[in-house]
Length: 124
Image 1 (cartoon, rainbow, N blue to C red):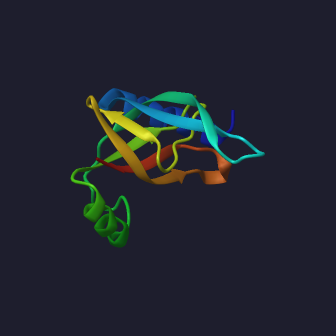
Image 2: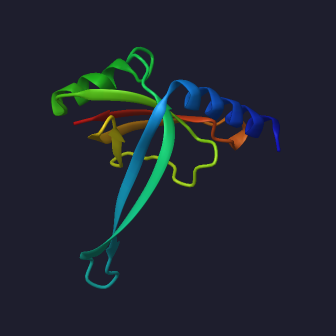
């Protein structure tokens, strides 16, 4: 284990103690290489430990202003990255407190290439 793997484990422990379980779901369609149409639907899901921080300092004001014109409700989450195979990205679905949100911003905190947490902004 490296130093940052240990830090990721500690972050997970703290977030698990004070946070909640959230689910990130990604729906991926296959693309026909000849005709270009989409078919099938592969669903990838990951369960994360997360905390819901106040919105300040999560993302820049411009991104929030743009998102406010699209979404009625915006949520923020800090997800622990320890022992997760799925890396959240834009357009994934975040399920938090039984409500589905569309992820519109993801910022990984990855010193030395080791993911510690993911900072997410999502709206509905």
